[in-house]
Image (cartoon, rainbow, N blue to C red; front, side, top):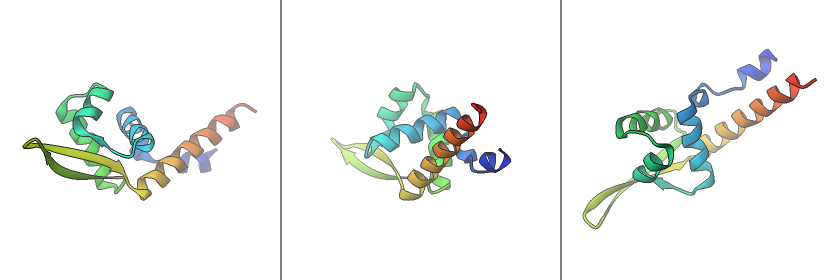
Length: 100
């Protein structure tokens, strides 16, 4: 069991980062406003969690202008997708080990 716990990624222990990564895994990209509305977060709260995932290399972003307004789109990196999948697999194995 200790081995399974070591496979869990601390970046996804927070429910907001878990939800962020889940949303980015099933969407090619999402803009800041869409993520904010989807998760019901404030600008500052969302920004800090996005920065955390960005610092880990799990997400990346592009800034563009649309109708003269800035638009920031976020997407999961391959590193992030792999880390998230491994985290979910470890959770699944942990749950299965507790059913015995």
